[in-house]
Image 1 (cartoon, rainbow, N blue to C red):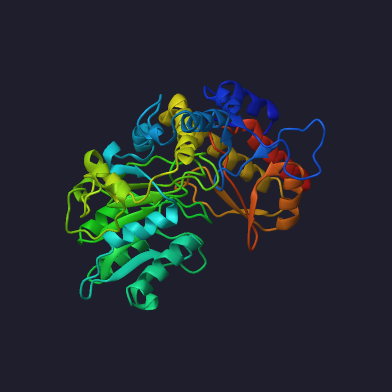
Image 2: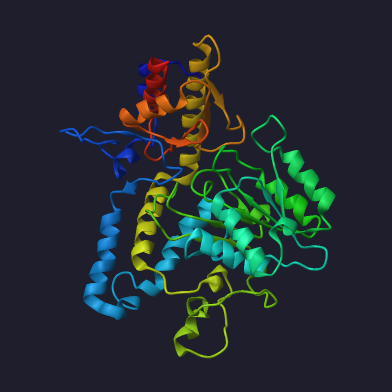
Length: 428
């Protein structure tokens, strides 16, 4: 697409956007910083990479659950318009399309870090010399803590077990060839490759298909943390042959703070009785669950990894958000995401061109990216961040000098992106 820097161009792009009406499906914060003005003005919200906005229908979905609870009590699991025993079925179909899985390979349960621990129980299988876990340096802290604590739980030394790959000296992102070469060089020591689909700090999108293929060629299992990828970029987990993946649903999936998480487990593992797992009654064979029999008999699907009775209120929040995704169309959202992101990159380049020297270094790779763009501010970074927030352009700050923003296709507009550009241009 051919972009220009004037506001008329942004407005024209918004007018031509077939998804422009979905902005009205969300509640946008009226103002970022107190004191609140009267009447409040609509802010520009670019933090879908941290917490997605609330769909307007979420309250209605929660109210349905509360009404069913009021009318039926515990019988709400079996009676009413949406019996809670079957609620999970409403979630996995739209979610499986977003993550590129078969519906029975997806389970909605717990939160991200809990699910990571459960997956390690099943998929980290150290044997002899083959016991190392390969991961990225400076993964999100929860991933680091999960691996460290789980390895300690097994009585092993994390410094000996966890093998990290870092960017080359002078670079900020990790090269794919370095990941693949490490797998080739150490395949006889590696039991598991565990990687983030998108790095939370740089916004780098990793080639999960190639990483999986290379690891599998040496008999190494592969799992991904998709916290910053699910609902953001195109995923094809089943066809990539990924073994397992976990994600949260409060970021790009807009399902609320502390929202219920999700897991993908390839169908080849569903009937594998040799796998270790921590069991709970909600993962028990569904037709006979209420017989309360001794001896765990898991459902032969990803649901067999469930533990406890889920929160129907969290399910309702998730269902409302996924309904919006279904109405917009996942492929349509991916197309707009690319256009919106390309427009942001164009305007950032224009900012640098207009200055005597470069003022913004883009940490996010030009090709391997999703919605998020991480900007290393070479001049007056904290002042620029504070000024953006004061103008209700809501971004976030990461030390030492990084502004992260993520224009998302469901509720952000080209005019939003232009306002960000214009604000920084004036400050500079």
